[in-house]
Image 1 (cartoon, rainbow, N blue to C red):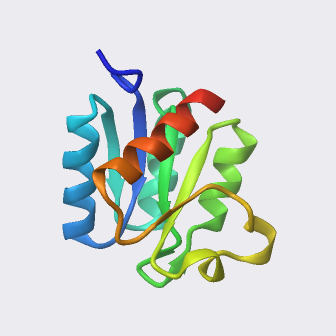
Image 2 (image 1 turned 30 degrees about the vertical axis):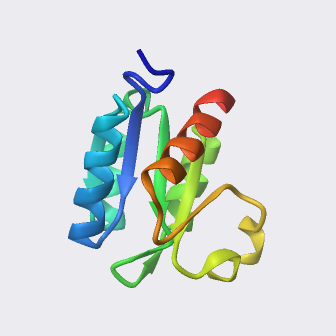
Length: 123
């Protein structure tokens, strides 16, 4: 049994292949996938339907041409830990979010596991 078993992870990712890969990784880690949301509006609906059903979140910074920061703000206000996912490193994150946890694309299974373990420990 892993420390991640049953962890409910919201995925906000607009690239279908990346999303499917991430879902498979999370399932292999014993996590429960919430979503995925391929658009910000979908993420808002998932959060409105039940923030209690979300433990942590992995947020692509650029989702179908929109910045994910309003979703991050909502999660932060609800006390839900999250990590940004970006291929641009810290340069892809607005100044107000610098220093937030991030997952650098392309990422590996071990990268995802490490980030989730850190997020799970802070909830």
